[in-house]
Length: 179
Image (cartoon, rainbow, N blue to C red; front, side, top):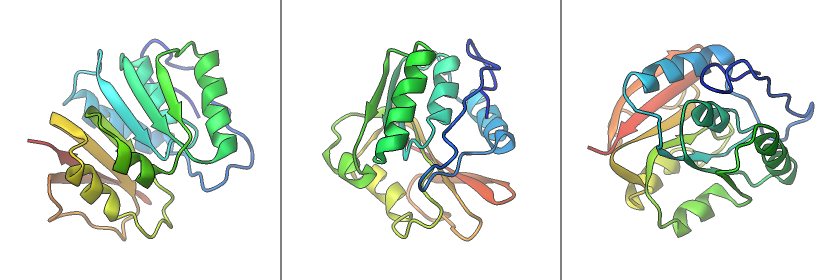
């Protein structure tokens, strides 16, 4: 796994061999995602939220491209520690890592974000609640983006704020914008 572009471009992320509930976004899917995002968002100085942080790969990519206020939510103790350690190695002092259940975080969050990314475990039964709760709790700033990573069996057309989806084989990204 590597950081694609920006000031940390080319740096490798070496996650632990046994990652509970974690399925890192493939480099091909991540490249496709960031091509879409960089054509629609200015990364410099944005405030981001990474739900189900896993390895932290998406947040490292955002930091590499200029995101300045970042929060990662990860409840697994070993992945939480891995993210903290990797962020320190990369000198990402601004990155806040929260060890908490994502749904509890959403319920108690009073902040708004320019970009929210959620890469939940594909087997998560409550995956459809994520976009609903983000909209309900008004976590997106005006013109803020929410990206949900999921499998082709999930469909979000018709959900509030949904605008499009992109398919990368077994990985699909659904895009929601707070217009």
